Length: 113
Length: 114
Image (cartoon, rainbow over all chains, first blue to last red; front, side, top):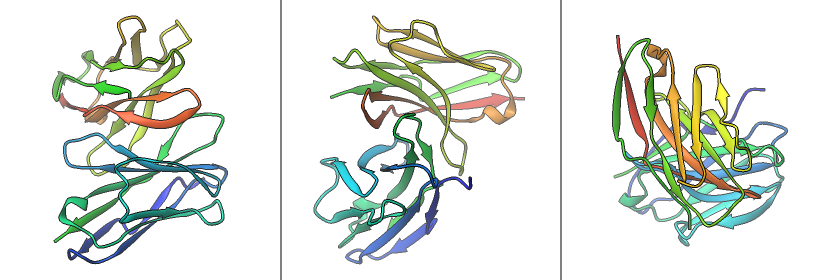
């Protein structure tokens, strides 16, 4: 068990560019979550998947954000036309459905210039 | 919607002493989970302790224990025999039963004084 991994760990981009982040959950976990954490705040829920199905999306997830989990394994989070307000740490977590304990990855820190 | 409030932005404690971090929450649900997560500087978040709302007994994990007061909607974390490695941001979090997205508080930064 290697834990939840995220790639890249850091991303600097210019406003208006598109970015994509990847999350690899713990292998036997069928639930995968995305959160966003800004400086000095707790993480805020963005979306989650059970296997390949996206079950819930927060209203924080604007039309510029899209998440996929095509084969029920890894997930990607894409932000189109980035804005400076998108600068944050993007956290991924996974869990086994029946245990309700989420294991977090190290996060991807996005800086939009 | 559920809310989680942590009213102590920062706390400090002498090494080997005991410290209590406060958390209150608001919900209309009767079945839910409460968590304390620890986020060390530049490191990933890890679960410290969890409590199921239907259990009256307070959860304990080694030096960590909670005081769960369901009627008061209070969920405090007590750390006994504080160690330097306990220095971190501590987040209180809530999840409804059957809907496991976490709602976090704003966190408490804990400093351990040698």
